[in-house]
Length: 117
Image 1 (spheres, one colour):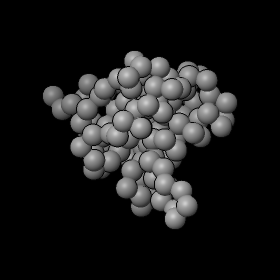
Image 2 (cartoon, helix red, strand yellow):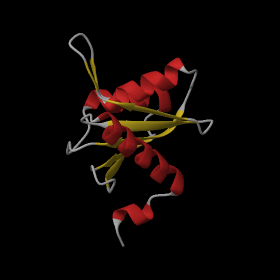
Image 3 (spheres, helix red, strand yellow):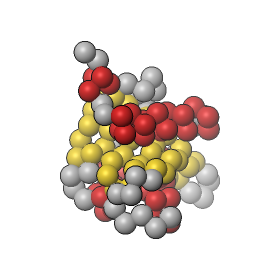
């Protein structure tokens, strides 16, 4: 069984959204978060001269700016082997330490899942 076979449909959805955003915008990372109401927020890496944000921190910021008060899950599609502590901290701030953060490769295959905290 492939690791992705064990991913539930709601988590598969945010991985797919993150992957699509990464490809469509041709950025290093794509991310998607799901709030406690089931709404999703997607973002890509922001890489401006005056502003640099990871895709995950951008997606969390979009959720907060849209009124989300809690997160159920987060997903990132990236070539990076692991996520920076700052990314996990952003998810933890909004979702709590047990919020699952899924990291998938460019092919959409889940590589790891870990709690935000």
